[in-house]
Length: 359
Image (cartoon, rainbow, N blue to C red):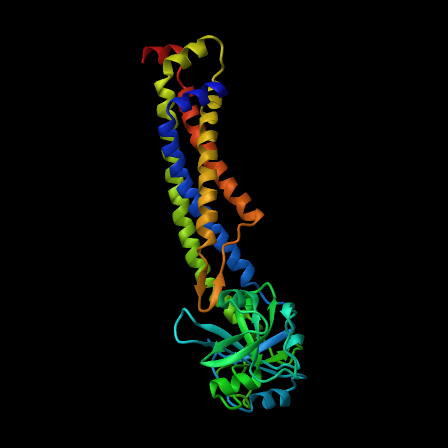
């Protein structure tokens, strides 16, 4: 019955190819969205840190008045590290995420892997910059070359990797960042150890300016991108509806193909084949159609996804075709195959050989 099913499908190869293309379209969309969702989850994961970030509520780039760092120390913080986070550039195409760091203390906050060159240190020359590998790839920059930040030229000292959204940033010294932005001594955030002095949430101390909030480091950026995850979930729901429609089309096509051979089916049943023979016959056709659709969809996803990096507020989102993503997509395609072949097999199995011959 498996061989008969494949032979009959080959006779109707145009119909089978058309059905494979329908499944390939839905599989391509499902696999691509799974890859982008996986990339968001891995890129914007929580940063491992024992520090809280104090900044303006609702914004990571709002300027904090001078003196807040001193007030935080007076309130009991054993360590206060100032940073600047902002977006520089004249258009979305040349936007660069800029971070001004305390060169003497920033390595306590983030474990980095220097891929090329060397990391920033207190003795680094003025206008030195260290690039995350994603940004370095985007700017085609390497150590020893110069890049432009807000119209000023900076020398690239190194390229680093953290496996987080930080890989999209350009790091310069805090002093260089203040000069570049014209902020004098103002910063956008202070990092304090999470040692129980400050609780997560709004800071209500009278000594501090109103509107300051303490959150785990990187939480504001990570939670902001949950909105994009919700949008991708909506697209995934649409793709699943398209997959359900493809499954119904597959069911109808297989049923029509089997119905064209109802006389042969009746003869085989009369010769002793059991009712489940219909399931084998239809399953062989469904598997062939689905395998062709999965192969075409996977090739399309890899080709299209390879050139479809998303840039959101300076962050690069690349589709990640990992083993869990592929396994989840294959399970989804398998479910479509099973449902597409079982339903017509059950329907045809209700007929006896005499009924099939009569019609």
